[in-house]
Image (cartoon, rainbow, N blue to C red; front, side, top):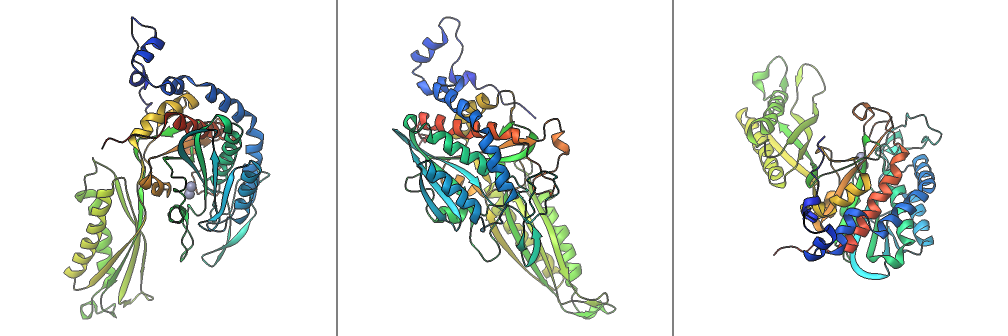
Length: 454
Ligand SMILES: [Zn+2]
Ligand SMILES: [Zn+2]
């Protein structure tokens, strides 16, 4: 894991002849830049308050962990958040995108608007972690009875953002701008047939009124506990589903020449699709994955069926490559089918775009993350998993990063990953998470909105 190069030279080049402070003033560098690197009085106040909030953050996290709720069903979690924000005197809108909550904290001084986002939903996973606050909740998902667990750590995200809300509400008079708290449902995807998640939050105006200038979010991940991993540009993949229906002509398995075998054609298509990523797109420019996860055909060993259905997922880190792969999947499926006298109908269901951290915003905020995490900060590896945070980042500049939660003393490469029934959050990460989000918010407000070159 490579450490980012020091940003120092970008902000205050050391000079042999002048004291650094004189140089900064002479160069006309805004006061917030020096404060960002060194830690202003506001930053020290944030860190002091964050440490005091640890007990509450742990209690909220355990309470939410023990009472997980599936996507678009986050009723109890939503109520917990609403009650908390109201008690802090924060303006609250509830019932946004079904169970979502938006809080607006107006600071005592004028300034820009920063949004902070936490997702609230759990997964249909039966918990296998032996802790006193283990989830025993059961529910139905896709018509099946399932266990429910915060196996992606969204319980920690909610506890961190509730803590940040309390922290910043206590410093309201000193805040130079407005903080919008976004507690989002259904990040894991709404149930079939329902809308939800970031897409619906945006549709219902979460980025407007007041208009958001930048958005920050984090995800817990099995890195060293308390470490921060960020990356400018693409950090998580786009994710799209595809379905291909291959239609041939039914025949007896002993007499294949009397029909058109869609099982053989579909098998050729599975292999053909792999040549898109291995032979047709520039993997030096950006990685990409096409995987077929489902292949359904036939009912009996000696009857060639009429049709075969393939279903799979597409992951990319580049929107142009994403569009190109969509086209190539259709072309590959249709052409291979035609070569055998069959037909193929390929449909792509776009889900979420690339999680694309704004390079200028990331560069600006990197000193804050380095100050918060010290030597526990690194450039993140790209991951082919996806996040609907990407939809906010399509609308406003955003920065999404990973917070390490691997149990202290463990080998992070060997611990259970997100979505596992053994996924475990080391609560030692909560205070670093609170400090990271609160400091990003305040440093952004102090610096003002990004000015874009026209
Ligand atoms: Zn997840
Ligand atoms: Zn997640």
